[in-house]
Image: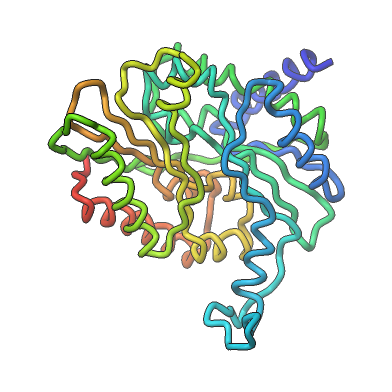
Length: 333
């Protein structure tokens, strides 16, 4: 049965690609509240097909309600974060970062840029005004286009890791598959940096110091470190070859107020791009930290966003992240 679903999902993807052009985000849309089914799938069944869940963030909508929808804090004092325009628009919003660690390893060795979507969010949301649940992700072809992978073999291998996931979602969640369409990506899809450093005898000393400064800089600017995944350490622990790199890790970044003003104000599907995955690596024996992240401008292009306030906030956040990295000593490339 699941093999049939895999073939059906792949066929649907191919048809959509040929008939309508660029695909953006793929969602299974099912009637009712599918939160329970989703939680069972993501916590109990996703590993059976090789995917690893890291840093899950469930029911973010509840945190929005607490931070922006209440006039007073628990101690009775005024809530400085209260939004006078607060309106409950979501019954559920969840970010669940996953990656197929076994399959992505060989691809990261050839194309480290794939860390821009490794891990990626298997997104779930339900609008308060609809009796429907949406579960899905950015389509892999668009992930590849954003991070700039053109090699045919790498593209085919990366795309081939998704049908089994899509089949599992179809089996456990069901519903109708909806794939959004878009015209073009922004002119610059990625922000990339390099940071030269004096290599110490113990490289971990530099990495620890940089990570401490990096996390502090983003937290000072109201970002949340929503996740961290050390691919190099994981593969070393498993005895899997990853010797091209002395270090390879990713950070998941989220600006809570920014996300609230997008996801809770009419565009929850943009959560498929969240949290932002910033990859960092040091090739073996070198003294350069290479850093990259998909620009938030991709959100506006792929989702055909029209709201000028949202588009400005997206632009402003892209600029701010670049400036934070420059303040850390990174050179934009």
